[in-house]
Image 1 (cartoon, helix red, strand yellow):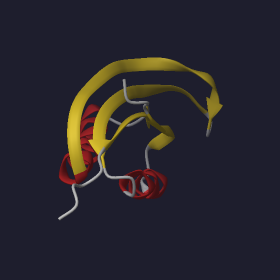
Image 2: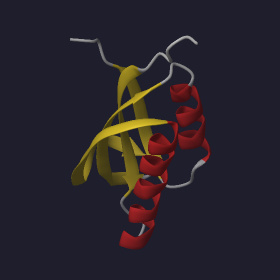
Image 3: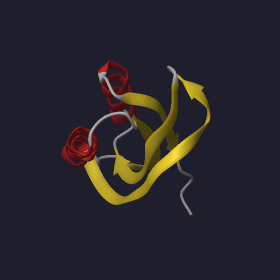
Length: 100
């Protein structure tokens, strides 16, 4: 049986700062759990509440999270789809990291 290919990725997502603390935590947990279920979660960095570089949907602040993980090549597409359909997510990016 062929070995499963696992690539290294990092994703940053920004959660709407107008949400209460409970909802922010729920969204963070939703995405970290989704990543854990479909790959290997390496680290989660909470950057906290920061001012956005430019206004997004009339918002000027957001909670930033950086997540490093390993997953198969198909998973980032599904993760991006989940980001897009979730209310409260202002901006996201998923980047494949080069192997060192």
